[in-house]
Structure formats: C-alpha cells, structure tokens
Length: 116
Image (cartoon, rainbow, N blue to C red):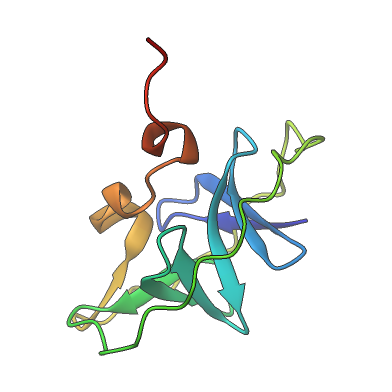
C-alpha cells in the first residue's frame, strides 16, 4: 500500500493493486499507469512523484473509460502512515485534487439508492 497525501501533508488515500482507496477502505478511483479515473470513469488527475493527486487547472480532454466492477472494501489499512515528504509549491497551472475538488470522489455508498 502506497499512501497518497494532500498538499498539507495529511494522508488521504492509499494505492493498492491498481485502485485508489480512501482511508476508510472504500474504492474511490482506478489507476491506469499514473493517471487516476474516478468510479464513474472520468479522468481525475495523476499521481505525482511525491505521492499527491494532481491535475492541470484546465483539465485535459481525456475520454472516459468504462468503469470497472467495484472491488470489495479494502481491509487492513494502517492506522499510522509515514510522514509526508516536504512538498514543493505547486505552479499556478497545477492543482491538488483532494484540496480543490474533493467532491470528485463520491463514495460508492453515496451512489447506491437508499434502503426503503
């Protein structure tokens, strides 16, 4: 498991077997190389060398992918993570997705209809 941090150093997600999971273990994205696609198949951003989820302020036109089947909840996420590295300041044309657009990661539980 590889932690993914926000620019303020807070661990916010983990990468495990080609998937992006939040700290609660819910699947929130799919990795294709370094690129991340949300659970609806839309491009979200890329994982940087310093383990942040970034994207251009004006997102590139990327075709949506077919969303994969929802994997099971990830168990065994560590309680503690290594300290985040010291991050370089981002240029104006790059944003941290978890800070600027956290709503991009709707959880699977929010997309399911409520029980009657």
